[in-house]
Picture 1 (cartoon, rainbow, N blue to C red):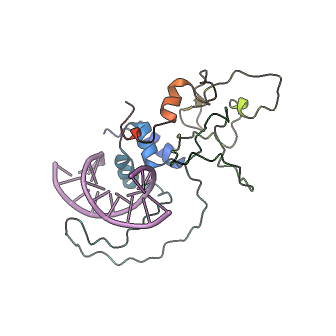
Picture 2: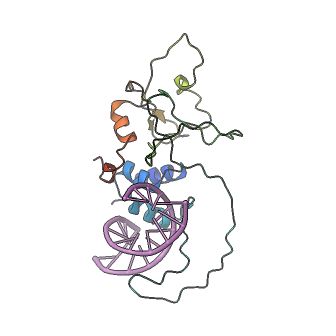
Picture 3: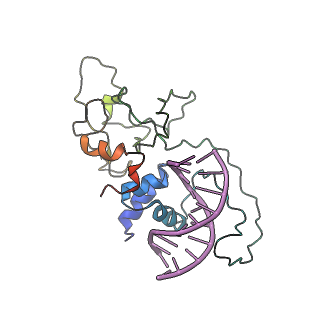
Length: 195
DNA sequence: CCCTGATTCGC
DNA sequence: GCGAATCAGG
């Protein structure tokens, strides 16, 4: 994998966005390991990981004298928004970009996912203030039905040039056929890359 | 079973 | 530096 500045930027972007490593990997056409590995190497802020590897004592022997764990990590009990966005079934035709960034005092009623471990459709969240675009998602105006547009994020949010796909989405889906394909990944088959 | 991320280690 | 293998918790 050639980590160019661009790919790294992409990684950082997605990482900062809170996407799961596997998710990032999928979108970057690499494995999650690569993502994690690189992220770690880049010293990217680790996201809530359930695992805490204190002692190893296992694989390949090599029990190198581990340094004493200071165990003085700052317990930042932050309610990290899981990247696991609800799979837009078909009801919320335009339920994309749930602005997790916004200080929502009241928990928005998140659509329950299927019984299965519904995967995150890599929910592209827009910035707190979409400014332009994205109007159709919360357009209270019943009159002017702006043509639905695919809200797959293109580019880096916050930077000029960032925009949404804008293509005609699938019926009942916030994304166009092209992006819906990668947004709604099969639970079992998504191991393989879309390529 | 599935998911997730973290670390280790051979390359 | 890279990432597969492995570990490990939900």
